[in-house]
Length: 297
Ligand SMILES: Cc1cc2nc3c(=O)[nH]c(=O)nc-3n(C[C@H](O)[C@H](O)[C@H](O)COP(=O)(O)O)c2cc1C
Image (cartoon, rainbow, N blue to C red; front, side, top):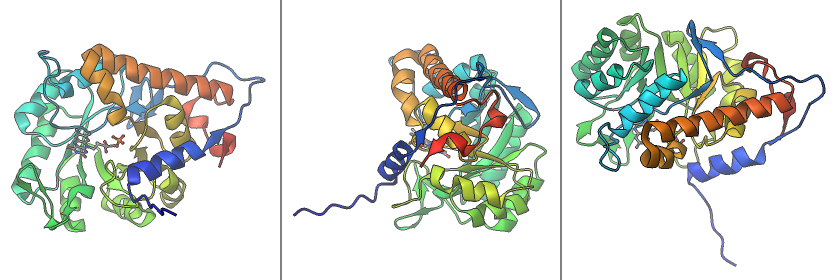
């Protein structure tokens, strides 16, 4: 008999997400409100855009995919994220008017890290951060599109955090120990993620959320989650398990590619509408009320 094992963290995450079911509580429930206050900002939804990079113009349109989803984020009044890019591209993102967090790569060229973070702050970014899960590759340290990555020490990360007055986001946190380290270093948010499956057998971010939530109790650190999130039900489950917000990812790409700003906007609005529906059906009037009491696991 054939014996197959699946090490793909994306598939393991999807299976885990689908194994979580939702109970109903309808009597006395009202139409829920999905707005949230995060980092002192009033946002329409806890749904966020993913920290993407390298999206070109789709179907010959004028704006790159990165700018298109940023415009969608602005129109929807949600928090916007972008990843690896040079400063001129980041300026174009800022010009969309979206409240944007710039996730800078762990470049070996530390002057480049500092320059990109300072540029982001001067340009009016909402926050800055780093994806620490893109340091290592199969040959040792990773090379991403020709750029050498490097080990990031606690002292280095502390220096980034101390160099800015903006909230600092550490992306790629997948253990309680690392979450506590981020809090100790002064991060204002952790993004719980396996970066679409970079680590074989990575624990699904949703599965580690309760432990991270517990480990960060009493600390002023927000918990954002991504990986495999494609619906309002997925976002609901993440919030119930301890996240403050959740980012869609590759699930947004077909709508973005086909419909540009409108496509991305409709997709994210659909995710938020389903979140509101499930909150209403489970008796949670506000995002901050959501807990795991309606999950069956
Ligand atoms: C085209 C593309 C580019 C990405 N670029 C970056 C990046 O530059 N920095 C980063 O932190 N994550 C980057 N990511 C990872 C996403 O931010 C996110 O963690 C991941 O896609 C979530 O998984 P999902 O697509 O299954 O939802 C990228 C993902 C894709 C698909």
